[in-house]
Image 1 (cartoon, rainbow, N blue to C red):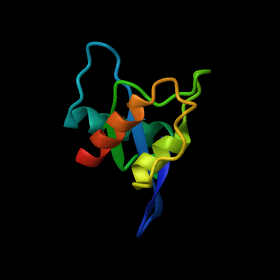
Image 2: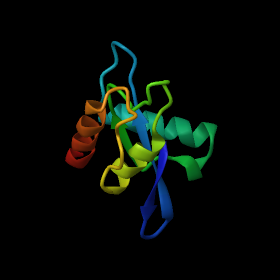
Image 3: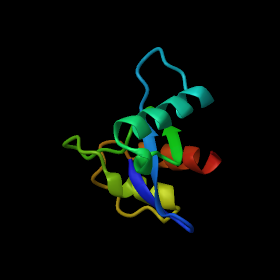
Image 4: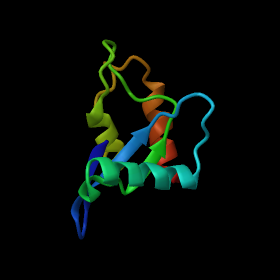
Length: 100
């Protein structure tokens, strides 16, 4: 989850979600995930956007690069991606986010 600027709220949450094998993305699942976050953490943490993905951008040591996720969510140009384990993940994720 990363923050994204919003005109009215100031900042909203964008969730990038990897589904377990056998589960398919759907509108109902998006609603369920939003409700689960609201009930477990609170309504303030409910994500505005939920993006399903097969992979997240990670460094070679396995850390998720939230900086790149934030750049994707805000529409900023992607910075240095040379430290990524799989640089193609970012391009695919950015394209998917822009389509949705």
